[in-house]
Length: 388
Image (tube, rainbow, N blue to C red):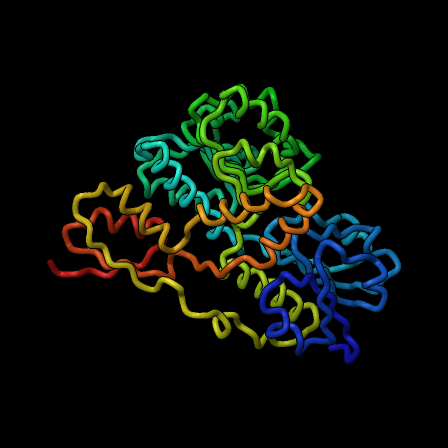
C-alpha cells in the first residue's frame, strides 16, 4: 500500500473513519461541492450519488480509484473511467432491501388512509433488478399479484415480461429502474405525458428509482387533473432544487431517503471498502457488524385480536419505520424561503435518523396466527411463537 495515499470522501457516507482511516489520509467534504481542485493530490475518491464523477472532476488529478456507496452508476462517466484506467466500484444491491421496505411501508400507509385492501391487487414493477426482485417477494407476501416489466432481463430470459402499457395498467405501479439516456431501452422520462395515459385514475404510483425517470410536468398534470391516484415520490428531478409544486401535490413525498436504512448504508460502505482493499492488495479488517448500534425496536408484542391482518401489519411496520414522519419533516421545509430549501433538503438526508430494517425486529406471535406469521416473514420480520 502506498504510504502517502490520500483519500477524499463525501461526508455523508457512514463509518468512513472506522473503515478508511487505516488505509490513508482521509479528508471529508460535502458531496455536492467536491471539485477538481480538491482532488489534485488524491488517489482515492469515495462518493455517493450526489457527486457527478466525470472528466471535469477528474482531469489533472491523481485519482486511480472511485468508490460509490450508492447502488446506481448514472452519476459516474464509466466510459471515461475505463479509458483512463481508473478503477471504480459501486454498492449495487446494498440498499435494495431498504428501498423495498420503503415501498411496503408506503403502500400500507396509503391503504390505511384510503381504506383499501392490498390483497388481490396487481402491482406493476418497472425494473426488476436487486430492488424490484425484493419488491416482488414482499408484495406477494401481502397477497398482491406482480406484473413485471424489464426488457433487458426479458431478453436474457430471466423474467416473465409484460409490456410497459400492461404494467402501467396495474392497481399499483412502482418504479425501480436505473437512469439511462441511451441504449435500446433509455429510462429518462420513461413516464411522460404519453405513458401516463396508461395509468388508471385510481392507480397508486410510486417512484423510488431516480427523479429523472419521470417527467415532472407530466406527473404534476396527471395529479392536477386526477388522472392518477395516490402518489408517493422519494426521488425528484434536479435534486436538491426540486419542484415544490409537485411536492405539495403528491400524497406522500420524502427527500430521497428510501435507501437510507442504517443497514443499507453500512452495506454500501462495506462494499466499497472491500473493493478498495482489493485494489490496494490489502486484507480487509473492518466489518460494520462491529459498529452498528442495537435495533431501536428489537421486540414487538401483538395484543389486538379484532383488527384485520392488514391493519395489524401497518401498525407493526410503522413501529419499525414510520414513513409518515419522513413526509412531515420534508413538509416543514415549505415554511422556509425557496432559496433555503435546497440546502435544507440535503440536510434532511445528511442528518437522517437511524432506521433499522425489518429483520432487526422480532414479532411475538400466538400460534393461532400462523398464516399472519408467514406474511411477516415474507416482509422480513423475525417471528417468535407464543403459546396461547
